[in-house]
Image (cartoon, rainbow, N blue to C red):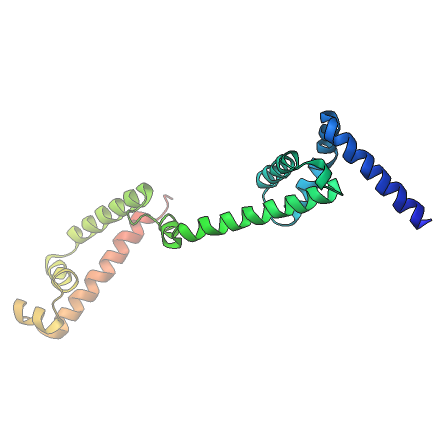
Length: 192
């Protein structure tokens, strides 16, 4: 039974090979039968849909260039040729990826160091609120705060400059910080 099936299959293949060499419509029929099957096969092997379609077309172009007498199994030839074209495509993609610097691709992923417009607007509003809160502080507390936080002076340097004790500097600074927290909290509190 198997021998009969093999004989019929090889006879059908020989007949198809003879028909293909002389009849372009049978090549079109083969293309219609095999195109989607080959594309699915190549997609399963890792090619994109468009690359698989290109590979199938290239396989059929190679089939057109070969004399039919040299091909024993036309479908097998198409499968092997499509696989070869897919391998060539993978190699090309690998060479292209090696040429393109990975660091250049990473440059596009780095965030812009400039603040976003909404963040910049919020920062301006917060800064204005802080400046207003500092202006409201009592003069000596404001002076101690500015000397410590903005000029970077130590408690001892501030005490010497203002002619007050180090403990008094710490009290003024604590009062200034509490006043700022209160002012900013009240400003950000939702309306009642």
